[in-house]
Image (cartoon, rainbow, N blue to C red; front, side):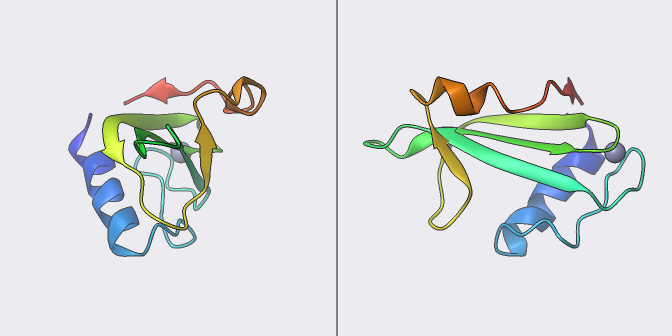
Length: 89
Ligand SMILES: [Zn+2]
């Protein structure tokens, strides 16, 4: 993962998991989206965060999913399929 995307994730967590003020490190567009995918019981999963314009993004594995965030369950395959294919940075 590049330092710029790492920085974006830090800003994301600091701003209560809101993306409205985030700017893509690669194309500079303000169109960042995320979703957590995880297990209902353990609340452990992964975070995918990406830019809707250039489709670059990052994935962070084995995170504890915070409260109140956009999330999907591991077994919700139909919804997981809706996550766009991203180029991992
Ligand atoms: Zn972008």
